[in-house]
Image (cartoon, rainbow, N blue to C red):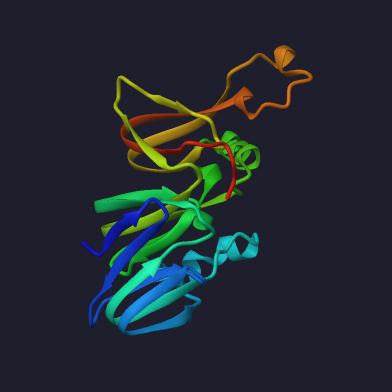
Length: 216
């Protein structure tokens, strides 16, 4: 297990020879051992092309490559940290919520419109998370950031989950998402609450929700 939560706002990562981690630049708090940190323009194993769409839209988050032998402590902005362990499936998560992840995971970029067509685009605009989302696929650990901590909600075929788009952090599994309105258009006139929209996730998997509607 590469990542270990030290407390709610700090995670410890074990770095082994021949392996690598990726983290947000500036997220290293301290380290022990012979560890090197270098800027990464490839964004994980997905390569340059996996980040092209996000860079064009100005949504890229700078990463650094972590290699060597030792222990590194990560944290950023006092945000709460939650560790997710993938066992071959795909995690969908916003790039700015990624604190660190193992190099065994393949990173890609998905156009949000491909999940829900026009409504997928609306979701990006309403949530303020942009039009692209980051995917991490394979076996390995991921440390994500959130406000107020993270809780996990299981999604099953007979029990879809509705989430405030501002509270959504990530999800994985065979999950479909669509944006729905909680209020009729006439009722929405004069209302500024983001709760007029809900993100509905259905299928089989898990959604990670932060205990706040505040953006990172």
